[in-house]
Length: 214
Ligand SMILES: N[C@@H](CCC(=O)N[C@@H](CS)C(=O)NCC(=O)O)C(=O)O
Image (cartoon, helix red, strand yellow):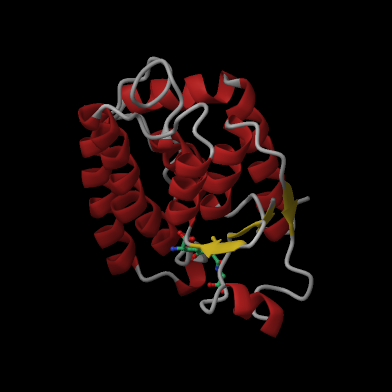
């Protein structure tokens, strides 16, 4: 199967983590003529990464891709089949996807001090704080977000916290998880995890490249 995208994208990283965890043979490809080319727009009319091609199946939207992979390739489930555990994992993923990731990117767009709108930054910081407070209560870093096994929650949370830790210093917040001990413990554990540490290193290299620091 092919995943089109770049791993620095937290959305692409969700799909890549899912595929790697399940040991699915796949290639991560950059769209040949960019993600706004007619060929790419045929796969995703919104021109966004990731896109998955699995035989005759073409999908976009990272959450849909992760769920598809889990439903089709049932070994190493990402969404626990027990309803309560499945809901807990999905809920963490939903909070990250709805309340953490978008606000991190909103602040990323304010990273240039010369163009910064501090009112937007303050508003988004407050929303991020609420999201972190919620996740602090939901995550059990043992070592994964819901316990001993990697789930969909980690597919979402690990890339999001990578971006969180990268972006907050850009607005002068050097220890963004100082007030959230469980989240800090989770992030530290994920940095030591074999699969996740490789993804994090690749995301870091990708981010440095887009920032021109590579
Ligand atoms: N809801 C989409 C969001 C995908 C998304 O926003 N991807 C970004 C990369 S981080 C992208 O491709 N942006 C390019 C653009 O909007 O032109 C998903 O979950 O897959």
